Amino acid sequence: MSLRWETLEIDGPWKAAIPVRIHKGNVQGAKPPVVLYLKGDAFQVPTDQDAPRPVVSALEEAGAVVVEADYGRVSGNVFPKAMECAFLALYGLSKKLNDYGKGKSPLLIAGDEAGGNVAAGAALKARDQMPGRLTGQVLLSPMIDPMMTSASIRGADEIGMRERWSDGWSHYLGSACSMQHPYAAPCLCSRLSGVAPALVMTSEDDPLRDEALGYADKLSGAGVSVTKRVLPAGSGWTGLYHGVGGAWLAGLCTEFSTFVRQLTS
Image (tube, rainbow, N blue to C red; front, top):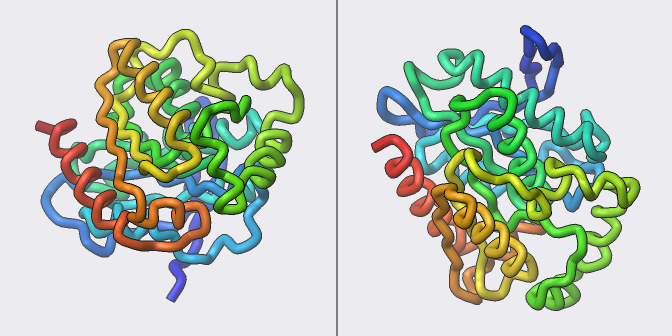
């Protein structure tokens, strides 16, 4: 049965009301991680907001309280509205951690594909506007390079995503001017130091592999603690783009759990 959408009311200097769903089916321990999750959809306005998301299931299985934000429908999936919506949700969670977690739960932001881009942008803004409150970021094949010129992107045609991603970037950015904003295309940002530690995951047969790993390397080069994981080809990772699970979910669950332990140890 689908969970009910509820409204996250945000007070303080930024006021907003953002639809969220709360997943906490396997919470254990006194301080479960609280994760703001942003789904992909290639920067397209989602047509089915109730469809189950495999990533949510994996994070939930790993013991996290997953707060799934309907940022795309609220913002129309355009910059800067989408990133601002995600940041406001993150800010709201940081002020209400006791309502979703317990005690001093670590706060993370996670996103796959286009949601990974928005999560990376929101993490940069969190560094600038709410320093020290974001514990980590989980970027799952982030759709992070609007130029789409990597070697691995050639495989996008094989899974039917090249045109969808190209159209998505055009929709999200609107104009070439938006591309220059560091929060819009974080891979082009020249100041990455101080952003929250990152777990970046992809697979050997992922069309977004090269840009995901390239961003991980840029973060690491800026002094950010980064964990990179590349799952083997054939793990079903590209099912991520179509809401399809597979062997990759167990890998995500394990890597996320290890990442959180490292952050909180």
